[in-house]
Length: 239
Image (cartoon, rainbow, N blue to C red; front, side, top):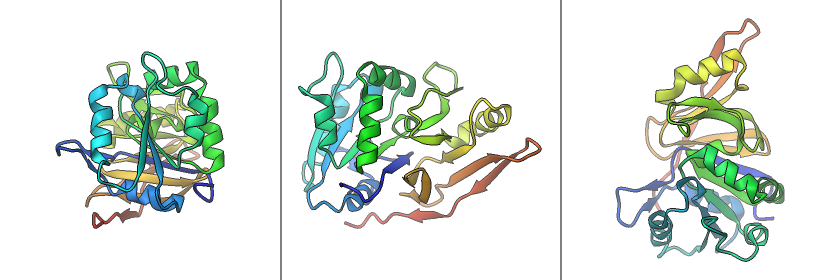
């Protein structure tokens, strides 16, 4: 297996897009280490932006000098590989980019990627991503896919929790959604933080910059919201 157990990295980090080429966050090195593969296979998925060509090109440029076997999966206007399931099953790490989580989930289900990702997860392929690529693995969370920020509960459900990225702007809505029962209890991340799950258990919280935090948000028996700031492991940028 690429990893010893089903693994998800749900993050609010990925690339420094102000750099040219994009600079990958050390979270990628962390993901590669989990696979224990010398030359890991990394597939980039950008369904949430409609498979924007500029993002796909920037992904390849970001890893041009790395000892990584890169590929991408595009679904617009049709799949770019002859067998989507076979392509994904032969990866070590699958990285889902930012964008509209509601749109990407709808397109994935049309192509039966919900089932394929479940198989990939069970086989030990590291499923990972940023923002929408973090939200998609959970039962639901908060999103601006509809314009205004609102809760959604149509996630893949590999992780039976809710998730909030961009937490500083969405804390109040996330708390209220859990309090009302619109979302289950869950986790949240600041920009630059992430969550490493082994199976459905949180293994560790991560960050690629100082002062980026992750949180566990629960509802007490009397209906009140409780927020716990998690201990975070700061990832080194050294190569």
